[in-house]
Image (tube, rainbow, N blue to C red; front, side, top):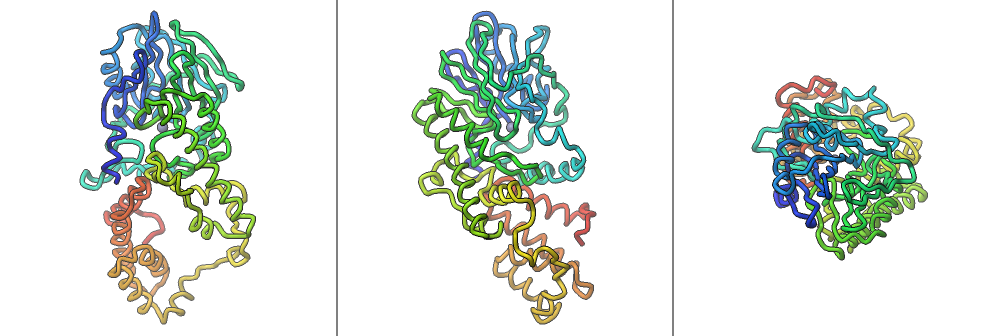
Length: 421
Ligand SMILES: [Zn+2]
């Protein structure tokens, strides 16, 4: 399934309309060029100048007019770090929302050290070539050596109620669209009926929570922003990642369904919360409605419904699941071992689980054994490595799969110097 998803970001320039071109697969995200009367407008700039320059070279086959403006859909690094490649000597205006830069990583840097490690795992950055597939909505193995080096700060701030302007003879509307980040906007070309969605839409279930670690992404805002996009009835929809949609019926249906899917996960979670259920229970129970789960752009290649449920739970209620047992859990490994009939019994249960392919259970038992002084911790560690690889072999959610494999490799290489073994 993941290999099939590669078709969404094979390197090419897509002709969206006669004057709109989108470069897909030159880095993780997309960059687009709108051709006007006496210049071009660039939407998003990839992560660094080298990949941006190669995308621009390909886009230049369609116009050599000067760059009049650059538009940032939001402040994530994979959309803003390559701007210098487009600036040249042209001195374009650079447009972004007035609250540009408020994406979570920009504000609270205190936990960036651990987020950096988790980011490497989520995206599988250190995986050897034979274990790499892709990142769900982006290819693996992007060139990140110059990431962020080409960032150029915005020169024009879009007010909270939006902005309509004309650049190079092209009418452009900027609409605030909080979702993946609070500083996101979508861009609407009323004459061409093209909508640039930024990262509030791509071909995969949305990453309502990122396992690299994020503060709460307001899920209701995200759903509402995508519903607003659908009301424009775009003929052409250009996502922040993955292939554009080039017919009106599909574009509008995709946006409506995407919004409904997010809303459905939120509503089901809230019903579960108010029924007094724990995040574990709700994460296990919530499903996309059947007519949505079938849609190719809602397959959980990137976001994950259970992860989203937990994020919504924590976002609305914090970490406590309402069960007094969890107020003071203590270390339970010793008691679990006693219940199982001792450390040896626990160990053989773990080995049996591994042999039976019950990898999640093997993982959990290995995590108990690591706390027990009379356990064979090396054996438990090896079981954990095998169980992680077993889980990865069944997983089509790219962040999960990358995380399992990266963690297994770190454990095996002895690089993981944390408290684990
Ligand atoms: Zn992105």
